[in-house]
Every structure is written in C-alpha cells, then in structure tokens.
Length: 307
Image 1 (cartoon, rainbow, N blue to C red):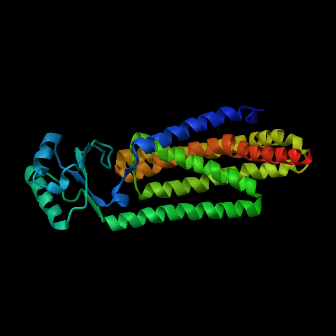
Image 2: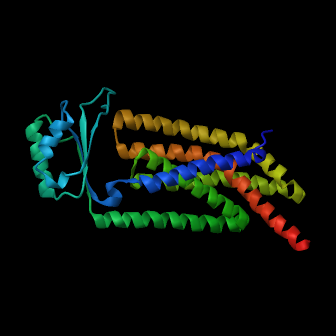
Image 3: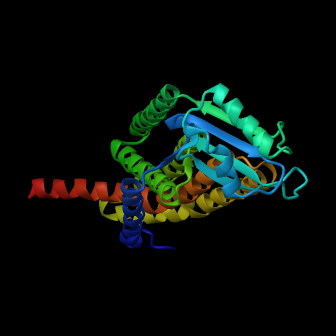
C-alpha cells in the first residue's frame, strides 16, 4: 500500500512551487487574452502560396489600425492529411468593416491565389469582450458556491473547504501554465475550466465518500490511516478513469491540429488535458490530505480546550 499521507508534505511543496510559478508569471507576463475578452479583430487567411513576414508588413503598412498588431505565420493540413499552403493570422484592435474590405483587397492584389472560401474573420467589440469577462467570473463564482453548498449538505463543511481549495489550486496551476506559455485565453478556455471543475470534483467526492464510509468504525486517532487506505482503494479507479479520458483528449488534440487546424479547439483540448492531469493529482495528493489537516487542527483545538 502506497503511503500517500506520509508523503503529503512533498506534494504540498510541489503544489506550492507550481502555484507560485504561475502567480509570478501572471504578475510579470499576464495573460494572453483573446479578442473574446479584449475586443478586436482576427483574420485567419490562406494566401495560396509561400510568403514572408516582410511581404506582409509591406502590404499592411498603410493601415494604421494594424500598427502593433500580432502577426503569425501558421501551417496546417487539409482533410487528406497533406500540408496546406502557409496561412496568415492577424490579431489587431477592432477594425471597421469598410477598412477590413480594403485590407482584403490589398492582400488579394498582392496574393491573387488567396482563397476567399478559406477565410476566418472574427470581430468583437470592447463592450462585448467586457461582458464575456464578467460572465466568465460569474459562472466560476456560482459553480464554487453551489459546490460548497452541495458538499457541505452531503458530507460536511471541512470536506467542502478541502475540495474547493484543491479545485482553486487546479485552476491557478492551469491558468499559470497558460500564462507561462502565453497561450491565448478565449471563451472555449473558460468552458474547459468549468469542465475541469466538474471532472475534478467528481474524482474528489468519490475518495471523500470512501473516507466517510471507512471512518465510521475507526477511532479518531486512526484518521491518517483511514485516509491513506481510502486513497489506495480508489487509486486504480482514479488512474483508469483519467487514462481513458486522456486517450480521447489526445486523439482530439491530434485531430484538431492536423485536420481542422482550429487554434481555439486546440487550446480548449490542451486546457482539458492539463486539467485532467492536475485534477487527478490534486484529488489524491491535495484534497484528502487537506481534509486530514483540517481534522487534525480541530482535534488539536479540542485537546487544548480540554487541558
């Protein structure tokens, strides 16, 4: 039997390092927010032939709106799995429709093979972006409150507190990794975070339910042993569930990358993969040991009052 409780301090150190690294990255580098939150325009184009960044800069130079815009050269694959022509992604502040049409005319003049049927143009105003941000935070807050209420009603408040801390730990680490890698944060990312929330809490509840069952016939002094035994009893279930989920997500990641080429979907699946890995880790090494710490704290206060 693996001694998870005996190694909980090592897990706390690892979690602390990941959380602190993520928070430092958020302070120093911030988040690479997509137009869903900041407002702006994204043009994803297939120019139909090879090109260089210098050529692109020459074409867009007359457009003041694109000054400081993020420009990327991307390459994907078509439905047959063959490499497609090089594509261009331009992320800029909000551009009016008239100016967008002028930009498209300039690009078509320079690259006549530009395929008009292979375009992706998205524009989001700053007001809409701000509203999406508020809705994202509101959704997260509502999910946290409802989970605390349910777990407190179903089990006890200490279980709810330990679960929510571990879930917030998961979210901070995932967001921190996105900050370190400067991956784009968009609406699908928020959906992925909420999905990870539900996935992680399910795995955690299975373990704490086993703890509650095992602890009914044991002495309070045996809490550490009961928690460790409960984690080991659910270990293979947690691993098998996570592995089957990861197999599907990895298949989706390769499919989106090689056959669809959607950056939003790739980011969505990558966030889910991170969430499943970190959620499985936290349900084993963070949530249950945290409950044990809270229980020890309660027992310690009781002994001091008795003394």
